[in-house]
Amino acid sequence: MGAPDRTEDKTLADWRREIDALDTELLRLLNQRAAIACQIANIKVASGLPAYDAARESQVLSRIAEQNAGPLDEQSVKAIFNRVIVETRRLGTERMQEQSAAAVERA
Image (cartoon, rainbow, N blue to C red; front, side):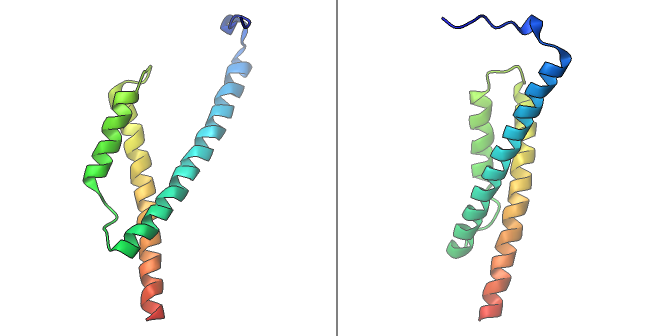
């Protein structure tokens, strides 16, 4: 067996270093998610689909709420993910507009 978790031995600085590491990982994952959203924007432009898909956004929020084990409550998790969705949709919409403008210029 591994050593017991000695959380009571951690200092404020230790906890903050852990938070900083998690923040770095969250940022990496958010940017990875945004990059995928840009790829989805490419597909949507090619397929003539709109940027906003209310059913998909609802599905994502429901799935996340179901997977949440806490300590954040459902309302908090949905609010956080809703903001992530809004920002990635904004980025995807910008990419879609850029692609559409470039297609018009090529025509």
